[in-house]
Length: 243
Image 1 (cartoon, rainbow, N blue to C red):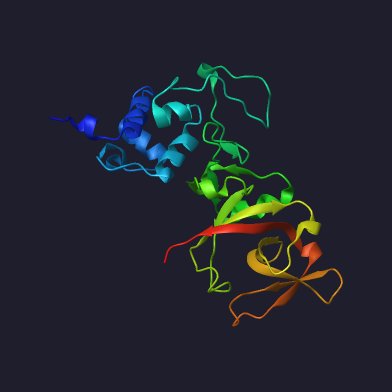
Image 2 (image 1 turned 90 degrees about the horizontal axis):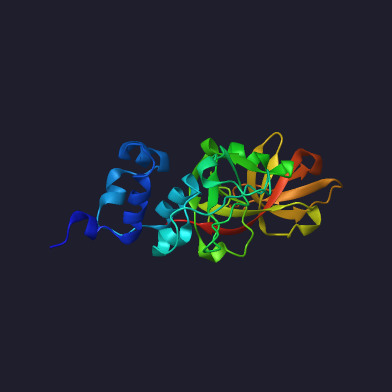
């Protein structure tokens, strides 16, 4: 006869094994990674979304150990690429509040992609986007985006891009650092000073110093935006949505 622990998937068992080393209650642990008790203690399988939340909250965990049970529970060294090239001993790990988007889920080569608020996304025009945990709604692990250089994901609001995008669809974005990489008639995320975040197709404008933004929904007319109003541009490379 199987015990309750034996019925739980091996990955869930390893997550609970790690939780037992933290010296905190299970309730606090579940709150930190944003899941319910039943999510990890039930006999159902575990989703990529739950694994991404766990690994994003506790980046010192060795993904190979988590997935296969092989190797050490913790990574031997942790490097913060934006701060130092010096290895940090495990027992001195400080988990940063701001997590650079270049952090890689090393063993699988799949990067957890942050789904961010519009306020956070507006900062991509600054050239370096470092996102606070409070601005991250979810983390997505999407193998098909592995080679797409996705910097962040954001939810679509409104109906201006219907039927291509529905409200609530999640779009994956690659920040453009040079305007010469604009792709006409492709969907882009545009950060503007006055109108905030726009999701539109881009077309050349007849006016110098302007660009034309076009909606897929014909009830929304196209309009021109001056380049000096735009603080950031990102190409939409994919999307996630529900029927």
